Length: 217
Image (tube, rainbow, N blue to C red; front, side):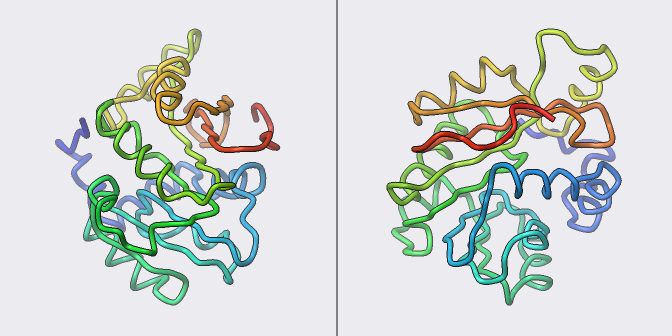
């Protein structure tokens, strides 16, 4: 369950979320993901679940078919204002949109989900993964990035990650179990130093073909 108490409530505003991302070093993280895992090429159809204010588009080719989805009306308004000429933005729950038969949510080459799943309970993650599976074209891929606990990590790192607004940071084993119930083919990779703060991340890649990204950084 997401924690929106106290100062964390500010992150519901797109400007506050963007400032925190800038401080943490999210731009470096997105560049690394784009190079190592997303591998977006011109003409690709990309669906971004939990797109936030659309900042990901700064590092993607202009000539792609991009659809961003987010629950937050504030984030979607910011995305439309800043990137309305780069793609389409839908306010809503991806799992609920599954039944809409919206053609924009089909035949994707790549579905992205960055920093969203640890805000969700297991049943919600399952629904979102099924939406992603149904949205992909047969050769398509799902790539997720989430914080993850290690069997052994510093006390400060574990404490800091436990303060995350998303209340469902999981271990690598737990992430794999969840994802493999929907995507039998799933590869996971541990990544360090993506942020300026001591966060540990897991990259989850689902779909056909061997992964080409680095195992850690």
